[in-house]
View: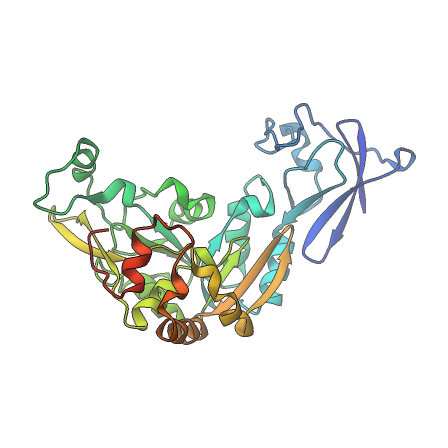
Length: 343
């Protein structure tokens, strides 16, 4: 237990199994340690050290091995810290050490952390995990289907050529895929719109087979090696693997176009809408393992099991993937088994 004075309010830090919980504490029990919080507020304002309520001079005063996550408010009751030891404990609990995983993550579900993405990646690599993340880049590389005339924005994108060495990534991908993509030794698949990037001992083996027309080869490779999908603070609507299950159920994927390293514009394939994937909760529940990491829930699903169960569910009821948005243009096409239309 460690005590702090945060914004003139007393707090105590009590480290748990998968995260450190910060509670308000009577003033008379406050200790000598202090975290400067010049701009702490309900929305998690960042201070000089890049995180809510932490100034640079106080960075080494946080609990050892912990990363500060945004406090809910100065007068709030609870906040959560997540550090390397918490991630390592979760890896062991979920039995993913030494295995390849496809990781979908929301850092904001854990809180706003200084170097949070790096801490998660480092802990996974320390346990021998090969980490695969989606590094989609349609905003940079997708172009109109030839010979359709390009609009101004598309014309600008058409001069951008993808290669596995590229570092472009869509803004929506988040901090952790960016962290992996920026690291030395990472390997990026050869798909200009929906690439996957891997880091770890099996990185080259997992992404080697990805091409413009075999978008989910890395996921298949993970499954062949007893790998898993990890949803870290996100829901099933972020599980790209279900798109592969759609293909294995006999459903065509969607077509889009991009310019490849040789300069030619080629058709590529990718999945459609995933907002209806929450319907797979009861289908996949029997094979799920989960644990808490700070304020987030880490959910692990074996790739082989997901493909078997989800593909069978799609064959039995093609409408299971349909989202709730009546204006969605992709779901009716996907559910009808048409696919391969311009994306």
